[in-house]
Length: 124
Image (cartoon, rainbow, N blue to C red; front, side, top):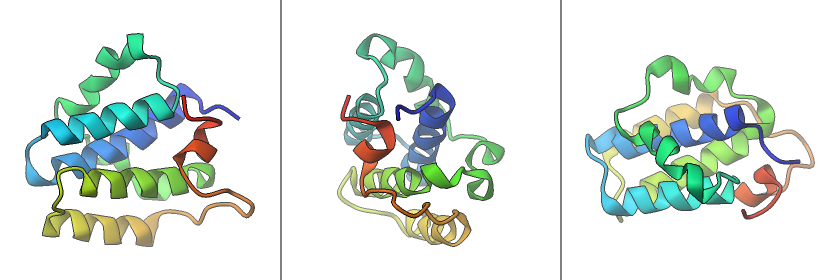
């Protein structure tokens, strides 16, 4: 089942939060954002609009893990891990944020397959 635009936005906002833990956005982090957006089904012609999520760190209420829908939890975790690995070194802040995310995100529903593609209904 394809993700709704709001679901895609949630996943990409979490990726953005992890990208911003070191207070800058590198070219490799933009590349990871682009790859994930395309995997989630964002059309190439709309990418410029979605890049606004990288302009500044997301507001805390936009990345509240306690309100993430269970069917998005695995995709949010995967997005966070991808952001942390994007530039080859994860900061202490990103590790702390990830541990908090793990603690507060809901468990994925039973029967959910692994990987982002399973959340988006395809690889884009």
